[in-house]
Length: 484
Length: 98
Image (cartoon, rainbow over the protein chains, first blue to last red):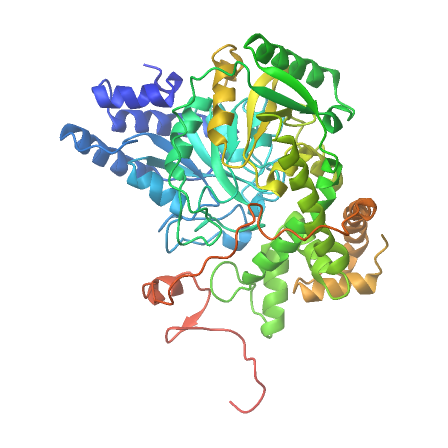
């Protein structure tokens, strides 16, 4: 049986009815990983023994009817989430030998629900990148065409779900790192409202922007797991004091009469004709379902990229100061004094993009520049957030492309950081305003998939998933999978 | 936005990252390109906005000052590159007699 062709809810149903066991399901995915991941490099670590013992425990619980809500379902975790006793590298040489002494809240919550960890997925180093080419563990390939990038930074999570080496994967999004790879790999990726998912044990890049979420094959699958990951966590001081939301209850509600905003500033940008065509077709689908289309204006949205490239590097330079070669991680050989230890450990342990961002952030925060850069950026960030609040007074969701185009070839943008940063031009604003955003597949061009982005008001993940599910119930873009 | 070699070296020192002399020109160009993006913010009128502190405008919560962490000393030291007598070992920091 092609178990990997079943949706998560069908897999859960199968496990409950005893059609197959978690051991069979888990082994099926582990076999696919060993057979196919050689050409993709989507995993840094495959936790085979642990997975099989978790699966066995789930099977025992089913036998005695003591099963948990997601018991025995496999999942892959981005290697940014600490997993106790398991290598947790964040895609960096700096943490290439780091075994986490504790687990992230995200891992714990899914583990308590009985989910089986298949392994840890590859990613851009410290989640900085949009092509998954900055990983110390080598680049990840796009299963649709291995000459192309899977996007980043959650490139391993997207690549493995797209190749059906895992039914779903956790991911994180600071400026688009869930939505952009989901778009480039033909998947559904959701970043919830800032504070919805605990950041405890999720290795920090830019703390005011980082948010965990999932990459899945459908909105229905994403809703099931995101719900279990969400909820207040006293260990994260920015975690929202709200109970776990019910994200599946509205999935089947119609979108008739609801309003979709199209930001004119986005559609004024130069856009490849095939991108515009796919988006226009998606809009037609929503119109046919009775949704109303409204043009809106987000006046300050074009400031998003410069705001992001001040705030994210500034916070990164502070967060990454902890990697000093003293307490954990990489240390340079034979340091001659303490300063040499710091300077060479960081020079050798970090890759080029990480160092670039630390330097930019250090500059933006240095004496004399703080007001001109960081403070100014935080003020502009408020302007962007205000534009969204105003827009959500008259619309339910905001629709745009997720990315300026389909995937690009490996190496094509690696020598031009700014060109690479433009990948995130549509996704960054939601992070700045802390809003939930998702990407779902809505077209293809030359055999590569393309996604559309829906952004919702704060805490309205359920509405976003309703819009996504409604689209997926009336189209089959999300059913298309690469031949690998 | 132009950066001098001296400025770049100072930033690198602040960040405690050693930069090789031969990589200065390319690094400088890359950083200048990124800093060039920042200029776009000059046109924004921010005279009447407060800087954002949390996207949902929440204040920092406080909790009772209680010890909640377990003693994980041995486990934490397992990840350290160099350890002696249960302490992190680093090159000598203070000059003087041994």
